[in-house]
Every structure is written in structure tokens, then in C-alpha cells.
Amino acid sequence: MKKRGVYLDNLPLEKAENILIKTLDENGFFSDKKYEMVDVRDALGRITAVPVFARISSPHYHAAAMDGIAVSAKDTYGADEKNPVRLKEGVHFHYVDTGDPIPSGCDTVIMIEEVHPVSEGEVEIIKSYSPWENVRGIGEDIVATELIVPENHRLRPQDLAAILSGGHTEIAVRRKPRVAVIPTGTELVMPGEDLKPGDIIESNSAMLAGMAKEWGAEACVLDKVIDDYEMIKNRLQEALKKADVVIINAGSSAGSEDYTSSIISELGTLLVHGVAIRPGKPVIMGIVEGKPVIGIPGYPVSAALTMKLFVKPLIYRMQDIPMPSAEKVNAVMSRRVVSHIGIEEFLRVKLGRIGD
Image (cartoon, rainbow, N blue to C red; front, side):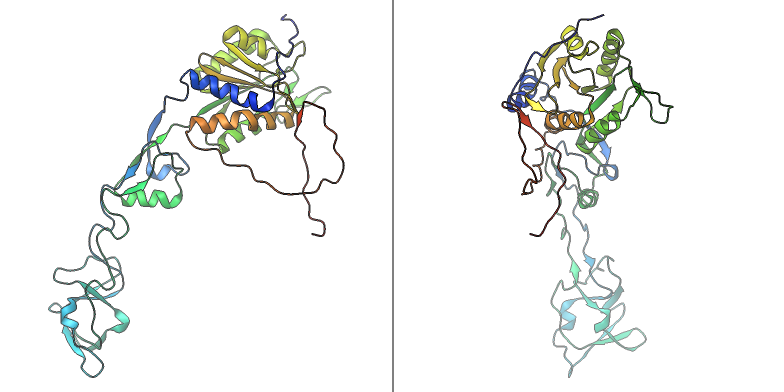
């Protein structure tokens, strides 16, 4: 059995947040911008790997913007209520619906409400029209070679429509960071199993994987592992073959069966073990096979907080996009809070409005 671990560090939060990113940056971890080609229709929420320029104009032909008749504007000149102009179908005008191509020789569309039939195949108009009225010209929405979306842009529904209209069916997007979560602990039981005293339902992995997915990563949860040094080490080596980032949940403290720091030290480089925050002090960060391995505490609140503080920036940096700023609300504390000196404390609160 491995000896009981001890905390190597009690680093200030800001220094701990930077140390992993800086070390990975120095080792070239972020320089390999992996991308993949995907169907534009499946690219919602993905990050563009290159700028996207229009291959074709949209519309790529002169199109009717209204239901009505297509005419040559010069055939309408001089028309008014006292001097209506008569037009003959097939000679002076053609019926068109919205989106139809403008027939050859025509440059204007008159709305059907402004057309007055007088006999079969003949209509009257009572006003003059300018060229290109009610016509969507070539490239009105998008001009060929125009930039549709830049690099490092998170694709929205309207972007997909614009890219398709610009002549693309596939698009280069950043490959999603792959995150593997390893639940550890002899006391863990799967949801739905019968419980006995001391059992803990394995629920953290769903939360941690879900957080990673919300930040744009692909996440997989490996089978839970009991508190056994060699089994956890083997599971970590298995995860490193599948993922860019590995999260080991629980086993990060200093108990007799907390092996994460020793395993990382054996297989790679241990960077941080212990941060001056509460909750979340036992967090571990290291590099194995050139990839970040994060030891997340087992207590759910600590797990969520350390995931947000240390893994979220990593995932955003891997996608080469800025991390959104946190929402802030001004509030008045309902009671006095005393914190330990030298510890940055994070408190869960319930927000409510009382009076103003």
C-alpha cells in the first residue's frame, strides 16, 4: 500500500490558475489547432477553424421580391391615373412569384395589388416605376468572395443559413476538446443500486461531464474504480489514449487511500497539489504524456467549484476562444461571514429580493 499523501502546496488561487496553462503553453500543448470537416447543418455551436468566404452570391440571379408582374421600367414611364398604360402578357410583362428569376428584358416587378386586369392577357397600370424596384439583385444578401464568418466564431443558427447560401456544404471547425472523467472510490455505487450504510451514489461524473459539454468539449465517463493504486493508474493510462484532458474525481486529498498525486508523479509531472481556496483546497494538477490531468475533490461543491476554476479556462483556451465573463449581481449579505486568513473562500448563497 502507498503511503499517505501530503499537500505539497498551498498556492494562491491566481498563481494556481496560471501554472497549468503556462506550463502547457510552454510545452506547445495549445499550438496544435486540430480541426475537422463537418456538415454545415450539423455545425451549430461549433467554432470555426478558418474564415468562411462565399463561393457564390446569394441570390445568384436577379429575383422577384414580390408577387406580381415583371416589366421593363421604360414601358411604364408616363403612366398615371389619367393616362393609364396598357401592357400585354408575353410582350410587355410576365407574371412572377416571389423568388422567381426576372425574365430577360425585364428589370422591375410591379406588385400584383397595383396591377389592374382589363382583358384576357392585358393589364393596366396607373403609375411609373423605376428600374430594379421590387427586385432582389444578384448578391443582395451575400456577394461571392465576401467574408461570411471569421475564424474562431461560434456558429449560430443564422450563420448556418448564410454559409449554406454562400455555397458551402462542409465547414472546417475546431475539434472539440476530449475530456475523460474517472470516478474513483470503493464506496461508490451506481445510481439505482441498493444502498447500505457508507455507500455513496456515483453522481459527480454526470455533473463534471455535463459542465465540460456546456463549455464545448466532448466528455466521456469511464467505469468507476475502487481505491486501488494500480487500478487507478491503469485507468488513467487508458483515459490518456482517448482524451486530451483527464479528470480524476476523488482521491485528491491527503487520506490513506488518496493516490492521485502519487500516480501523476510516477507517470508524469505533478504541478500543483493544494490551493488556498475553500472549498476545493485538495485540487491536483499535473501533466502526463503531455496532457493535463486534474485531480478534482470528491465533495460535490468542491468538485463543481474546482472544475469551474481550473478546467473551464483550459477548455476555452483549447478552443482558442475567450472565456465569457461571469455574471455579477450586487447584493447585501444577511449575516456576517468570517473567513480564515490566507484563504480565498467561495460561499454558496441564495439570492432574493427584499423591498428594494
